[in-house]
Amino acid sequence: MTGTPGTRTGRVRVLIVDDEPALTEVLSVAVTEAGWHPYPAADGQSALRVARGCAPHAVVLDGMLPDLDGIQVLRRLRYENPELPVLMLTARDALEYRIDGLANGADDYVTKPFSLEEVVLRLRGLLRRSGAERTRADDPVRVLGPLVLTARTREVHRDGAPVTLTAKEFDLLSLLMEHPRQVLSKAQILDHVWSSSFDGGGNLVEVYISSLRRKLDRGRAPMIHTVRGLGYAIRPVEDGR
Image 1 (cartoon, rainbow, N blue to C red):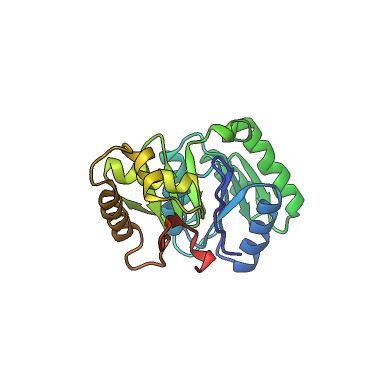
Image 2 (cartoon, one colour):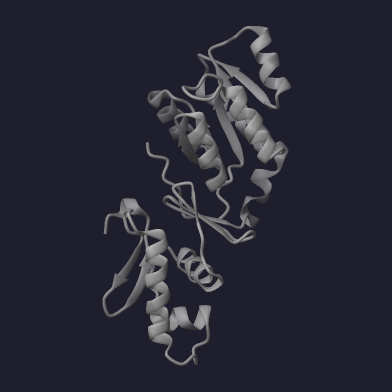
């Protein structure tokens, strides 16, 4: 399970932070089957980076990580988003550990071993109380593979790292991400992003597509593709074509 994001605007995003690959796998499957999208991270630093990129609606956080302590990660997540629901997982079942987690901002606590059904039910309760499941259709975040576009703040991240775009580059990328895998002609792009009567429009589109590729795809698997004679399409990396 790679946790590849879907393309549906507003799909609930759940950050899963655990250094056990097998556990991350089963949690990701359970989250997917619940209708949400999993974003796995194997350590605290990765979790913070992924959280900034995907803007999760909820977090499943292991209390023991190989770099930062789970409580440290919790505090940083809470600092950046005080309203973010966090469900902590831990093998520590002593009362003081549970109190410590809850006192530092965890919304709920599950000790290992646990049932996946319980985790999903507890997550659903947190999401319902936070309003995430009611409002996700209005969520301005678009996700395609490792690429995340946030309309409200006009921010773009790929693999959790910010990508700086001009206003028109952002508008062009937003249009492509509204139509994943669909081939858009130069005329369609020009009409939506500029004006169909704009002089030299075809060349303008080529220039902006080239600029987007430099910023998004350089050194990475390409996402923006030219379909000769037809136009351009954006596809998730796993499409492999």
